[in-house]
Structures are given as structure tokens and as C-alpha cells.
Image 1 (cartoon, rainbow, N blue to C red):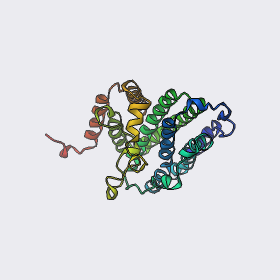
Image 2: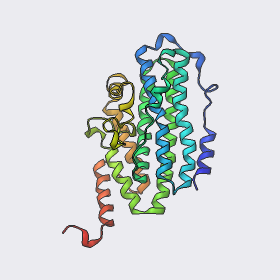
Image 3: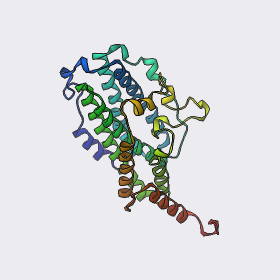
Length: 284
């Protein structure tokens, strides 16, 4: 069981909202309304950890270890939303999300394969870590710069925890886990080939609500994310390259095999799928 060890390790580095955020260093001259609005949108997006947790608990009923870890993940993700809202409450109260805006991103996700979902969120943590680091660089107001840096470090630790559960799945499940992880790894590392960045908050997750079935589509401004990335924090190809490199590095650690490109990871995926296919069912 990984939960006791992960709880202890995350508890040791947990930050305190009152003691570890330098609220007294706020500089009003370095915070624009445009910037405050992006903070509001991120606070609402982080609130979507609520429906994600409900999904994880539903789809992992057979894994009490992982579900117990959700208590830590959920607490820390909701804390991200809370600290962003606290920042706005103190310094730009007119931008604090309403309860209705927060509740609007709580909707049911369709059931999905648990292992693929795990890998998707692992890659999502890597991407969030880089988004928030980039956002910290973009902002000039010192308190929000510090907040984004702190929560980016949390996202990196969450990714590390998910990686531990993926390693556990390889031992317990074998090739079906390898195939699921490689499949999603190829998808999430291929974002440069798509029209939008791939992250759990902008993927469609409820067919009956389509097209209003992504977290981003239920924000006050559904077009906000792409504008934030492209026109504000300037999350460019160099940053995207860092995301892909981290995904490939971690899949290399996971599978104990070096992947320098997405194509190499995809060849590995095909190798595993072929190995799982009975010889009689393979194409001539």
C-alpha cells in the first residue's frame, strides 16, 4: 500500500496559507484587471478537482489504496483554488468567483478505463506544473508569482505520486497497464500536432452534455484557456517541448526503456499491443 508513505511525504512539505504566502509584499501597481481575471479562471479550473475526485472514487472502487490517496490529492487541489480565491478576496474582491461559477464546473464524468484516466491525469500534472511556472514568470506582482510557484511544485509532487501508482499497476496488471499508459502517453505528448493543448480540463468527458462537457466549456469564458496560453503567459513551443520531454522521461522510467521521441513511444505501444494479441488474430 502506497497511501501511508505518500501521505507522510506530502505532509512534510505541505505549505501553510497564512505563514508561507508573503501577503504583506503585495504591490497593487503590478496587478492589472486582465491578470486578476486570469487568476479567477484558474481558481475555477482548480475547483474541478471536485468532479475529478468523484470520478476517481467511482472508477477505482476496487483499489482502496488509490482511493485513500485521493483524500490527499483532493485536499491539495482544492487548496490551490482556495489560495487563488483568497488572493482575489484580499486584493481584487470584484473578481472572486461566485459559488454558482464554481458549481458550474461540477458535473458527472462518464465512466472511463481507470488506467488510461490515471495516465491522463499524470500527464496533466506535468502540463500544469509547466503552465504555472510559465504563469509565475509572466506575472510581475510578487505575491501571485510566489503562489503560482508553490502550486506548480504541488503539481509536480502529485505527478510523482501518480507515477508510483502506475508502477504498482505494472506489477499487478502487466501488459494491459503498459498498453494503456503508452497509448495515453502518445496522445498527451502529441499536443503540438493538435489545435489545442491536451489537458483533462479541456477533454470531452460526458457524451450526453456534448459539447458543453469539458471543464473549460463551463467557465465564464470558454475561450479563456487558449488566450491565456497563447497571448498572455506565452506558453510557446519551447515550453511545450519541456512538457513532452518530461512525459518521455517519465515513461522511460516507467517502462525501463529510453524514449527520445513520441514516435519511439508509439512503436513501443504497438509492440505491447502485438504481444497481447493472440497469434491467430494478428494480421498476416
